[in-house]
Image: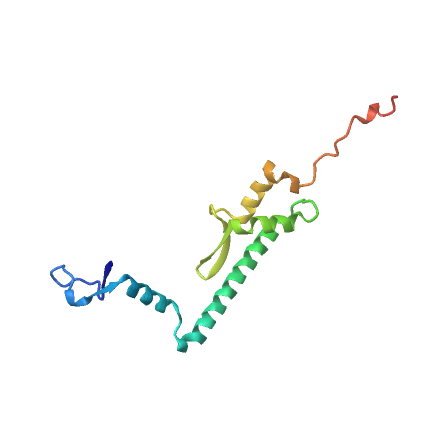
Length: 148
């Protein structure tokens, strides 16, 4: 059976050596039980844990909404096929991060670029060309259409 040594105080004494009285020896089972008990909230902290979970869910929802809003703004002026903006938002929303700088939240691409720059580059690529309407009508030469 393996035993693990855990320092009570990671600070060494003046000589640079750790003090033996500040160490505890545990078995793996004791260590696992200690870790498991530290992950479970104490009965008195149930309200605090619930408030923290609610705060985290609010923050996550806020960031998702902010990310989708920025994508919608970047796609707003662009000619897209019907329903294309909604599809692109769902497709791209995980490719952007919301970061806080000086009390302000900003959305940027994973590579650090602004949302509008990333959207413009992606829409100009062949991979997403089918979201843009065709630039020409196509067809054959109209001058020859009267010939049998």
